[in-house]
Length: 69
Image (cartoon, rainbow, N blue to C red; front, top):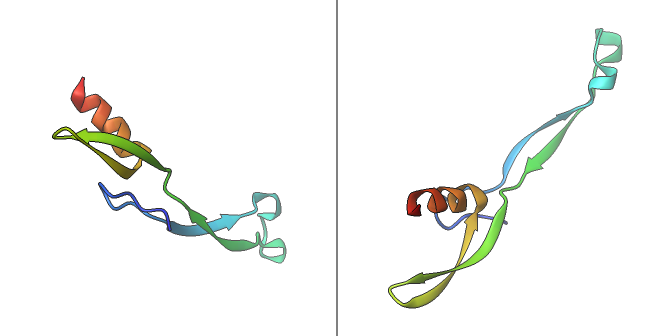
């Protein structure tokens, strides 16, 4: 399972709804389960002169770039 080592963001669950069949109760839209997976990348960072490979989500990666600039 994809999990960020910085913030701990992982897979979230939700519902998929077909809006084509929405409307009255006779034609109720089917709802099925679905997953939202975190966009996790493997990046190498240099920490105290030692390269460390980290699984990090793109949101944390973006935040790190902002704080460095």
